[in-house]
Structures are given as C-alpha cells and as structure tokens.
Image (cartoon, rainbow, N blue to C red; front, side, top):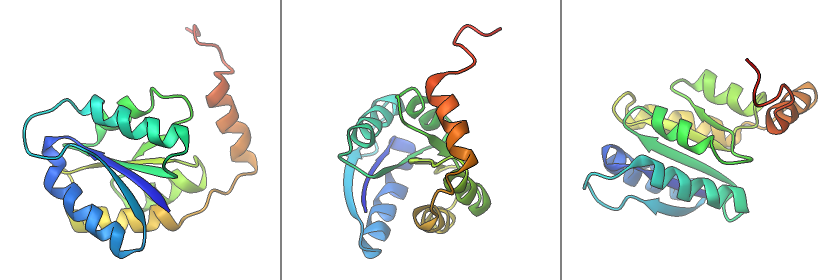
Length: 150
C-alpha cells in the first residue's frame, strides 16, 4: 500500500520511527514532512497529505501532531477525506469497519510509538464493511441535512 505520512514538530521523532516501521511491513511511503524539529504549523502538513490521498497519489494517510486533534480537524476539511483520531486499537478498527477512514491521526504527546505501531497495524489490515455504512458515508459526503442546519 502507498501511504503518505505527515507531522508537525511535536511528532517529528515519532514520524521517523513510524516510517521505518511502515517500510518494514512492505509499504511504500511518501514523507510529507516536517523534516526537522523547527516549529511549524500542522495545517500545512495535513493539507499536503490530504491532497495526496484525495488525488490518489497515496492510498491512505497517517498524520501525527502533539495530540492528533489539530491534524484530524485540518484533514477533515478536504472533500473525500475521512480522518479519524484513534488512540486505541478499538477506535482504529471501528474507523475502518464503519467509517472507511482513509487518514489516521495520532498524538505524539498522548501515545507511545509502540502504541501507535499497534494501532497502525490494525488500521491498515481492517477492511471496510460497506453495506449500511455506505449510506451513512454518502450522507456525510453530500451534507444531506443541509449546511445551514441549526
């Protein structure tokens, strides 16, 4: 699988280890950055990775920042991106089974790298169930309740 991975400065060290881990599993990786510990703005890296998933240049994406919250919010602004912040294996599995998440968000300050690896492994091997979930995802994609609902 071709995976794009991006991070901010808080997750640079974790990203480096995760890339090595993904390569050891036989995945191709696109390193969207950041490439050092200098302070950066996470939305820039969420955008770069999301555009790669959106265009098909990558099958899925992994984004890591301090908590994973900022990356998930930023990535979900892109049409067709279903980014899920997962801090347990159960959440990772459900994000794939029911939501067909195509971007996994993680927190370098809230999770160990070993925990991230375990979550990533399950997320990468869990297939989407489709069926009734397809109807729900379609509603999300088309904003079936209306953008101005109060």
